[in-house]
Length: 353
Image (tube, rainbow, N blue to C red; front, top):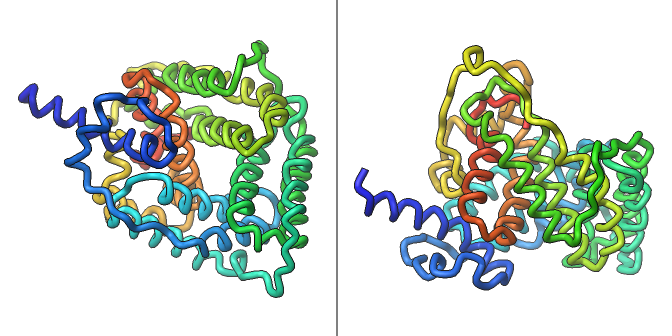
């Protein structure tokens, strides 16, 4: 390959990777000298409208049990991901199409509440309900934290949705998760601050490099390690530093999963490109095979990562990862972590993760 072409490809990848972080989140100088070369990135002006906040909160609240709240959380994540990043109009349209399909497939869960009577002060009940779900260690892969961060953020942006019925239902998810037995880390080492927690996630992710291209090796759940980390970061930014500190114990348990041992001779290679620029390209979102998998009923045996992603994780992990990468200055670490994390999104044969 021509070195000039290779350099251009790397430059484009990191322009796409960093543009949303620097422009959308206001973190200056993270990748100095890279964002200035953004003239070859086709960024649009299209965003999702605020009805997606209403749909997302409704879908979370109407979930029968905490697990199906993934659906509403996915809609919120998709909304914020498009709002915060410089995606092309074509990508935003494709994301909207997938979110609309998700809502339509579960239309009863997204049926609007009638006669909303908002009380903005009730929003604070959601983080209060979170505390028992984070005390003592990790429960449900951090979902109480993930749901709380998204729902509180969305309700602050759409306070007319702070209806007592919605708030009570959202709190009930935290209550269900709080009843679970917590997992504690094998070795406890408190983080100095939230930045140290984010760096610990990336240090953990890059440990899984030996699994790249080995889809049949079952991964620990580092997709939720990522969304859990972002949610704790967001909670702190929303003013809940104490909850973030309490949640560090569960976070340490989450990212401390060991790298699976395997015999390479028994695990054939199945390499595929999985950079963030690939995943956020028009081609990825318009790929007919991707859309077919995302819109098909999930069957673990036949489609280990198809509908599992469209069910909500696809949007939540991309939303979270876009928010985290601006906090890591080591470009090579970001690039490696991207391949490891996003292989779960790109390769339909990946087991776990």
